[in-house]
Amino acid sequence: MATVTHVKKSCAVNPLKMSAPIGAALAFMGLNNCMPTLHGSQGCTAFGLVLFVRHFKEAVPMQTTAMNEATTIMGGMDNVEQAILNIHKRANPAIIGIASTGLTETKGDDVDGYLATIRKKHPELDELALVYVSTPDYVGAFQDGWAKAVAKIVKELAEPGQKIAGQVNVLAGSHLTPGDIEEIREIVEAFGLKPIILPDLSGSMDGHVPDNFSPTTLGGTTLTELRMTGSSEFTLAIGEHMREAAQTLQDKCGVPFEVLETLTGLDGNDRLMSLLAGKSGRPAPNKYRRQRSQLVDAMLDAHFYIGGKKIAIGAEPDLLWGIGNLFAGMGAELTAVVTTTQSPLLEKLPAREVLIGDLEDLEDRSQGCDLLVTHSHGRQMAERLDLPFLRMGIPMFDRLGAAHQVTVGYRGTRDLIFEVANMFMAVAHEPAPDDWRQGEEQCGSCSSAAAH
Image 1 (cartoon, rainbow, N blue to C red):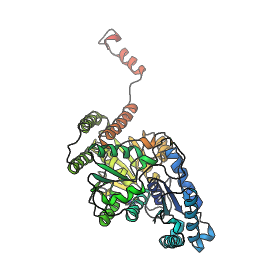
Image 2 (image 1 turned 180 degrees about the vertical axis):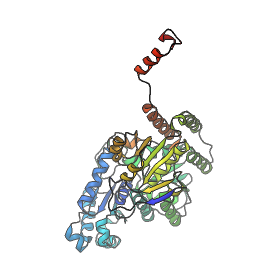
Image 3 (image 1 turned 180 degrees about the horizontal axis):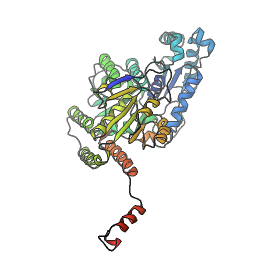
Image 4 (image 1 turned 90 degrees about the horizontal axis):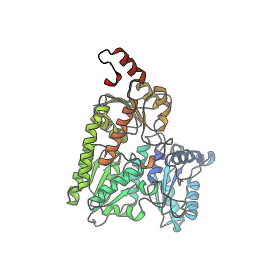
């Protein structure tokens, strides 16, 4: 059991966390033909837009209500209305997802009331889905905003209906990459089930070259699929922060759910296979039995290099839970652990202490560690501490292929283990050629170097 400590400082130094509105915006990007919009100043949206472009290396659709000093004081009704009308006219999205910011939350804008008024004034918006989620910057972090957005999407758009045999919902957590989501889709479909993935970044942010330009998201969960989530036989929630959305869907539409805290590691994937086998009535396909055997062998091979190592990790709670437990299961010690927001999983981590803090806190506790794991803002820290650096999470702007990184399933876990073990092998001390020659000169038991 870990002791969870919330660091109290006057300001964050080298921040680890990103804000809730950014998490909500990325969740909206997993919906097809959607325009994510931040209700706040233009600067709030610009910073988020730059962050996503640097991470995904793609064009990112994102709009703003462009609040200024006067409209903030007087209220943002006119700005919200004008933004919706302009987006509807110019981009013609199926969904507009609106996330609040600290600016408008501090003012106290009643955006739900605004939307009701706007719909009455503009019947041309009847076919447009509008989803608003309250995500003040000063409450929670990235995965909290994502969780709130998914729960609100389900609440607004899921429709109760007759259950469709073989249809399952997969609520994907913010710690999953587009590559992870694609891997999960393949696993579910291998059991003969039809998944509706929400949000589905594997369709919209996977780095493909589209045939046509679209000002909105291109790919992801469609509006029709969103409404059909209420007709699924069950829901699979990946990540503890997806529990609220799964519970909302069950309360509204009667769809039972299971929460899998992580799909990185052996136990989580065994549980997934058992669950899918039970729901589908089919045994696990042979290829996954083979992949499981490969993972077990990889763990056996790599534990010689990972066991006993001291690990420093800075990540969102659900990502931290997955990789932290993997390292601990391989015999490593979680020496320095820092996260961004509260979670019921934190106390269960196999570490002495978990800090809710920033990268300065992580650096202070990483002296003497063997590996640093965090997003790209930790690169200078890794240089100062002279540590091998494993990039995980968002943002990852100094490497290509962030969207295609896969660390879930038997295969993704196997590859992650090999990557980490190879990093340790690369920094292991090897005697220099001069050391060998010196040993030859001092050894009198043989007359020639060839004997050595």
